[in-house]
Length: 236
Ligand SMILES: N[C@@H](CCC(=O)N[C@@H](CS)C(=O)NCC(=O)O)C(=O)O
Image 1 (cartoon, rainbow, N blue to C red):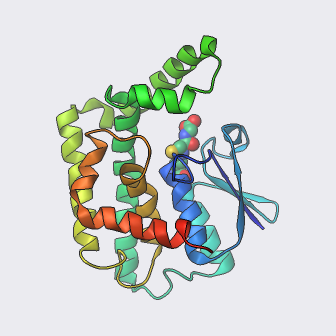
Image 2: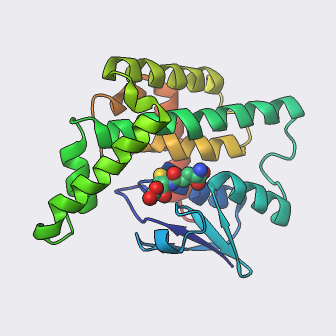
């Protein structure tokens, strides 16, 4: 049985990490049976020091893109097999736009912007004993801000990050249009990636004026609710 290692429930979402939600929903979309082991300690066991990773038949596979590739090869590609090569290229390009660009904007909104920081601190560190809470929060935040500087998004002004995020959301909204799913009337792996990220803006318990930019795209908001209804709220 496949075991997914993640951080754990986050309000109505299975995880605060877009990458972990991506794999959780991908597994649900494919109908592959899986169990979940949650906890921050999973990071210590993670082959690449990040979550998610999965364990299957004694093998550990890390990184959401490698996990999807592994699952496709081992269990068949029930979501994307019928896509044309051009469609697959679109899936790849949009997926990487979210993994490598929109992700860092989300990280900035949560960790660097002072709008969300008090909420995030309470949500992620509130359970720690008071003596170490502030120190742990400060240390982790400092590390994330350093990562944001290294990646580059952290060097932009808030106004510029708003522009960067808006470009991605606008492109996603245009691709979805009035279709049920990003690649048409059948679910594809792009829907798993998109739900992983968009749900963090639309359905997560942590929201701010910056993350609420996504609320300005009614089709993306409806998409999140549609996927949530189909894969999380209905009897499966
Ligand atoms: N490329 C990885 C990215 C995973 C990732 O960045 N995970 C973050 C959470 S969103 C993480 O585990 N961060 C913990 C850390 O860096 O210590 C993937 O696609 O799975």
